[in-house]
Length: 260
Image (cartoon, rainbow, N blue to C red; front, side):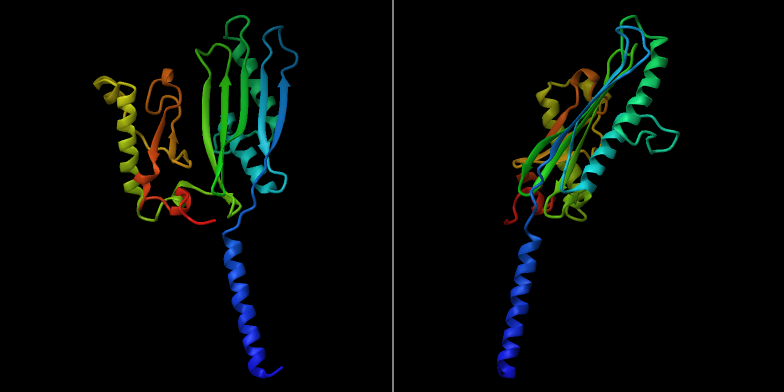
């Protein structure tokens, strides 16, 4: 083979390799989660007053790092049991249950008869599209004597092309944070009209920032915790921003505008 033919062959192979690399960067491994179930019941407690912890979570058999991140995030938002730092003391379902039972035992001293503590930790697929997997993490904590339990929700947005969780900052075009806030404010105004909020409501429950965003096929959903922008009776309010309002604000990748 001549030098010229060898050079052409090498250049052609490099060009082909470049194309393959580019194609690989746009491919994704579709995540198929498995359900993780567990139930813990307090022992040594009065009849009908034993606390319970129910876990319905997910794990990714081929992505252990994501499985661990999901578990740690769900535990962190569920426990509220710390040593004064931001890190929860519970690092497993079992440890969380034992810590919760200790709190339940203390709460029983002041709670009404036949009242028992309850805790649920749940992860479920909220949406999966355009190589994005959005997992909804939910917790509900109730201790005997409380007027009501406290729910909490967090969206875990996994970019299957990257194989990791992405943040709101990564989903927004750099420098467009203020524009996103304006779009969120417009969505809030639409929500206020939907719930027929009066002037007192608007004055007492102003909009606050939330980073709990789920990029769906038709638009982004922003979910708030109870008491953040409305009374407990309103649950966890959701604001919706359609994709056309996010053009030039969000990265096209997270508006479903990039090719497969």
